[in-house]
Image (cartoon, rainbow, N blue to C red):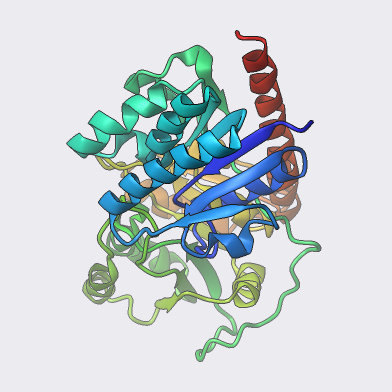
Length: 383
């Protein structure tokens, strides 16, 4: 008889952020080996791979917490899972309470911000639930350090980097139709939610003008919008971006593209010279891993990034990009120019793709299944 796993998460498709993708692939990999059930947000049933799913409204954070705790306990009593997985720290509390109802083991996936989120209620209620999990999977070495500092015993922590969807074949250079001329331009690309931690206004103010002086035929394309599918919301930065563009005189060199289709994003990666990731080192906020750097590498595009949070786990210095001391914009400008002028095998597309292949979702699923198998075996023996 297959072991049973209840997967509890607030972050799941149809939402499209990095945590949603990770939770989806984690659930997918386990569903092929175990009996699985999903407790997730509205709309999750259509993406549950034919497995039973219960949806909870995420319109109100308080309502979500109360309802998810109730539903997790109900499902745990009725279905009697052997293991309950929390897809993030936000789901750790309902997962832990449900485990007490059924005697199941608990595993929590943590991503960085869900450990240090600066809210007294969250730190009082959710972080202890993370710490009491039988096992904690951190998405980077930095997240593992944060978990230890929060009180998770080091022996309970596993580091498992998120995966990436590898292109089926190398991207062809297809000029995307964007309503402006790209001919003869060198392209810098930034991809992700427009939130303060990503550091884009600061990059435009303090680094981009110097880069443009060295490389006048340069375009910086920003892909993303200022929405975040999490109760840990941060204010969008569109107004600050526009102001930074005007103050730096970069109107002819920066294009804000908003959300784009996967096809159009593929085309942008195919023409981009570098991916830019100027993440800020902020108190109470953290870049847990930097999955977008792996995604860029999977398309053969190197990344220039600040050395902060979990980003170093997603970039191989001198091979898939350059890491720069956090906050040093002069050095960041120099690294970008050096990356643009690279020659030979330096930061080659082939090296980027080979590095990204280590982070395939297949490998992620294999590692996650092995961790779960070990937990289930140990729990059944009463260890």
